[in-house]
Image (cartoon, rainbow, N blue to C red; front, side):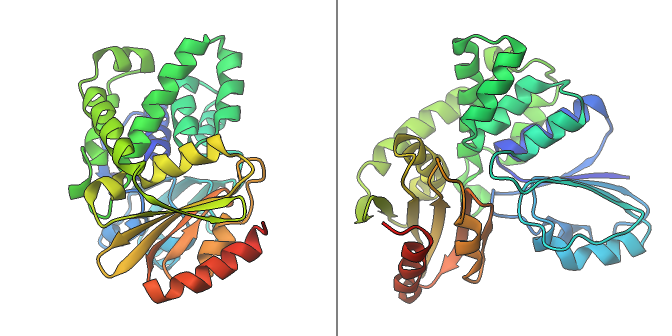
Length: 316
């Protein structure tokens, strides 16, 4: 059997899509909202199978790896998040590069000899890596308009991945992957997709609500406070990416109320993509990468300590 595990954001979807364009199989798809990353837990009974993982932290799934390998499974792992110590095993194959200037779609694109670079551009733009996307677009000879189309596709798929549960999303990430799966050319998908119109309208509406969020400045850095509402849970990622592009020398944090806790989306200064992962890992349920990270559940009484560590990470 084949299992494909992937992050439910743009990077995870387009990394998997590139790989399966080159190595088509019928596989069981396992994914969820963007922060649903402990996906190997869903493979407790898998034996003698091929497991491929995209854009999911190895460190967050560490406990499940050894039992899966012991049952004869082979694991191929592509990622750019913090991994910690990577186990050594003949059936564990990792292509992990925790650099703040790359993403899983770009890593897979390189591994495949840049066979499907258009989709890699979509994943890179979804992860706010516009410089890398622009470089790849230049190599492909794409026009500014074509790059803009791929960027919108990446951003809309990324927007769809954010939520506490899949009920917050416009589409289950598995649906979006299955929608692009028949297409080799991203421009053909853009021309025919019905999903993009839904995402475009939803994103525009949620961005309008986001402009009403409360703002707290810490020097030239920004914290935005959103209420406990589906639009707020959906927009946090794309809004923080947008603010990072608008103010590339500042760090940005989206603080969203979710029940009795806070959910944080953190972006390091775009011109110095460091520190976001270390900051968030200092708190339970925190993780991510150097340029972009988050905390799933922060008790409100812990917010002052977060702000203190934030201020130490990026002094004003």
